[in-house]
Image 1 (cartoon, rainbow, N blue to C red):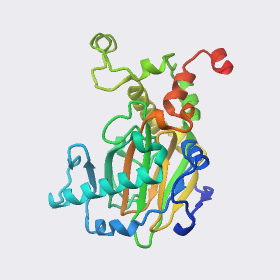
Image 2: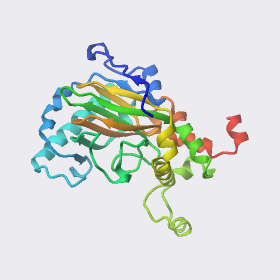
Image 3: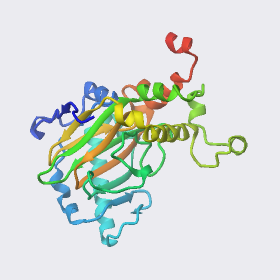
Image 4: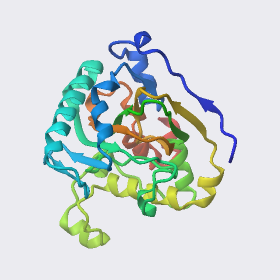
Length: 289
């Protein structure tokens, strides 16, 4: 498709709320993108980093083949601390149960970057987590367009329930409880299924769904989508686990991926885990619920 509806919804930073209210949290958890008042000039020095960076806050090391000097590690530790503090302040409802899983600096132009098929973000996809699987937690991204002049461009498409329906037309979705979807894989179960990965059943399913979407040429070519424009210097929040999207244009962006526990969500029933649990139930039970 060549002509996509455009969407900006951008407001001047001075017009944005200092903390998220309940209605804004509901919109965020429903899959809407919210622009936020984050001073992106705070991290302007990152534009001096000419390479892609993926930082692991847990190990405090690079998680990719980054060639930056180790002196940059302290800077990314500072960035992690600053972003986590900002998130806890701006979204106080999540403060008790939010964890920064990864910090990425995307230096290259999205329109011309080359990646292995599985790593292509220009294809419609969902996020499974950061460096670690989500285990059913929500995946929240704080994104900053650090470029001084150029916008960043995403394409937004189908939501998690629509994706589940599309997947279910090809593959039966198991009927499992939430506890079963998030259980640690047991040795006998791994022997029975042949899956020796450390992933929980939810994460295994989400990975299969992701691969299905990326490899589905009809979906990639025909899915209804709209283009979201992020102006230079803007910042936004998005739950990228429950709505398919693609990164089409832009460079010099900082992406902070956080995991949010179900216990602090405003609408936990809309989480991918809750909807997957409901979707796998018999149809008459889904309708009754």
